[in-house]
Length: 70
Image (cartoon, rainbow, N blue to C red):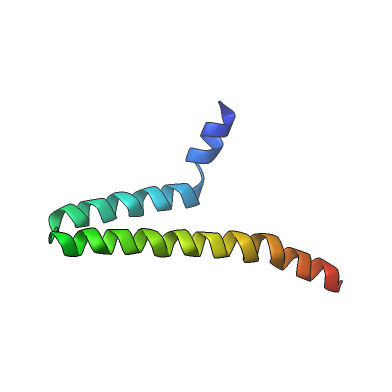
């Protein structure tokens, strides 16, 4: 149970949750048919790509490069 508490009390997780709710609210308020659906689709693609790059290069490769140089 402590893993759940640790996860949900993280400031980063709370920020992402608030931004997601705000984004969903704004999407509902300003829905414009296919334009909104396409924007959501491309936004999801950009997010997935950015998440991959951050985890692949910044969190895994960059520390290896730093420790190899030391």
